[in-house]
Image (cartoon, rainbow, N blue to C red; front, top):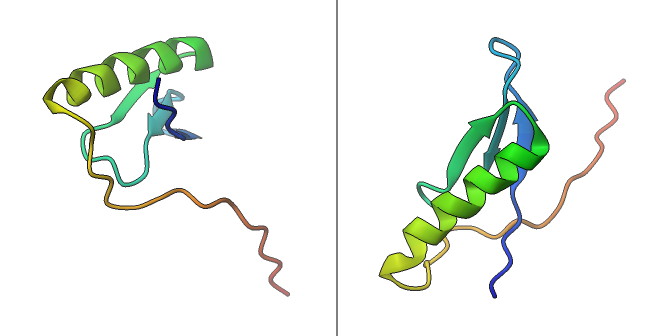
Length: 69
């Protein structure tokens, strides 16, 4: 089993959750709930991996809080 980190944001125009795997071209989806989004991303990633392990173009490192005065 391979684990991927997905970034999840809410689209302000549609209200939908949008998720993508950083550095993994094509690994993105949208849904109304987190459970639904996870299922969609799992399906997309499984489909993309049918051609073998992906060669990631970037690696998720983390988030930072930036204070601006």
